[in-house]
Image 1 (cartoon, helix red, strand yellow):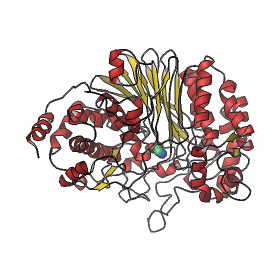
Image 2 (cartoon, helix red, strand yellow):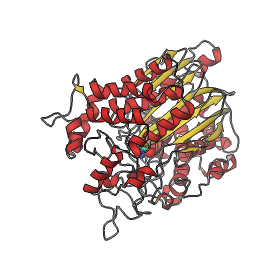
Image 3 (cartoon, helix red, strand yellow):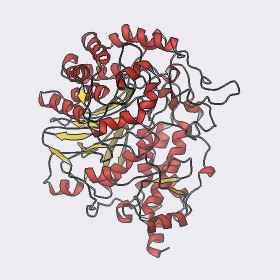
Image 4 (spheres, protein in one colour):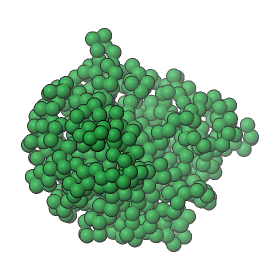
Length: 579
Ligand code: GLY
């Protein structure tokens, strides 16, 4: 091991480095989209157009986020939804911020052991498929609260594009068709879902074909005319409760009647002079991103270099410690006393740095034995308007197409968010992950999430809007985009496209995106004691905006576009649109 590396890493354990990025790396990424008045980045190109049109006709970023939320429910039904839930982080033009939690809640009849058999073992698939997997949806209440409190336009105006796409249909492009093809077998099991998403011959819709969703259009019209009561107190809730009762679920009318959005204070932290604003519990996202950033602040990442063994080592160790905390300590704030201030304390980060061996991989089994489990299908979008209001939304059905069920006549796909709860504390779940007691199932409780809609500010001005799907990897995907911009000098598209690494405490494996590291680097890491997995393919689809230039270098020169948008090159149907 070279002496300079020993010296640097050992020194960095006790010294906080604040280094400006050196030069931009030369990754092979397309140029970010540019805009002077607004930017909308979503995982589906038609939804991005809907958002940009709202901005052009005078809506603010919250209006655009509401319209996009409804549009994605139609044109991106694998994750966009009104039958699921999510989070919205808003940073207003005056620098204030807020957070809307419209994630699903457990039904009143839910119990801690509802997914266990008589011997106390998890029943395979019970928390993933069918009505028993469904949490009480929050998206309609959340989007309406955002619009009412912080938007400018009418509900009818914002829902009209979604209604039109549902009624008239939309033509599938390659990226759209791929998601249907991958879930055809599952959708075929529910006659109402199959009738919408499969053709009469049972095959999924393909490229160039039109998908219309008349039942969903009717549900959206009812919500547009009557507001959330049409969903929570009217015929839609009745239909879902009826289908649930008939097909093994436990949803009841009071679950819908009692659903309430929570407006929470976002989590904030400071990383090398940048102010991060992100999701508080019931998401682990903001807390764990901040905990990892606090640890990383003590290392000269810019000097160590993107993708070097040294950088990967300290990032993995920071992730290992932070994910133990995530898995053992965090849960719904109405049920669990979350130690947020301890986890965000810079002194706590230093304690973690002190425990990291500069030359050897840590051992997960030596840390506290707690865990978590999550699915990988979600969607994130980022929006900024002409006034500088920035909105980051991550919302989800959990699994692709959620629980794979639609109540007759509603056209609404329902989530399988109950799978994000601990099914049996201390026992690996269906993904082989170990879960903690703080996230155990209780009536009206919200399962712990990793969704991390994040806004970064610098000197009181918006700097970056960022987030991603990716289950437990949402946290590291969002974190790495931030680090790639701030420490490695990448432009926003490069930062999002750059190969990723991930570690989540258990399994004690460093996941590395294929071709992410050189063989030499892999050998160095293996020599330090790391077990590497280069085969896994789940790497999310980040959507980001950088303000004032496409990269820090361009911002510092003062010559960049005002808004620079990037959709992940991994997202086959997405688009960043500016104007
Ligand atoms: N279901 C993914 C998450 O909430 O993190």
